[in-house]
Length: 131
Image (tube, rainbow, N blue to C red; front, side, top):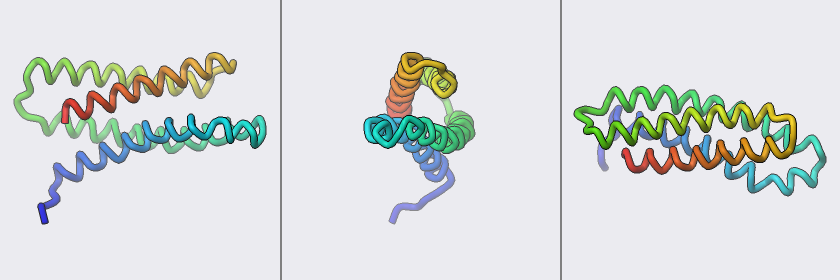
């Protein structure tokens, strides 16, 4: 068996948190039609509960992301540029998620939810590229 060291645990925690953050958004989106059929308050209740989990996972992403950056040696310009784009998109995703959670209309909720999800998917892709 291959050894499991600190680097593997660091990356594992980052990937696990990304799975919750991005995967959870996809699951909530997929469940939305069923949630709407359960009553007008069901989607918001599920979204609020997911928000608690998502915020915690984003905190883990932030901490492990900083840890990942500190652990990388000798990066070139292309790596740094990709990392910068990833960080900007991650910030946009978080801000969009918060605006989505506070949106006052169905249209704003949909638009900001879509922005959060699309940018989170882009961040995930860039994480794979950087990996």
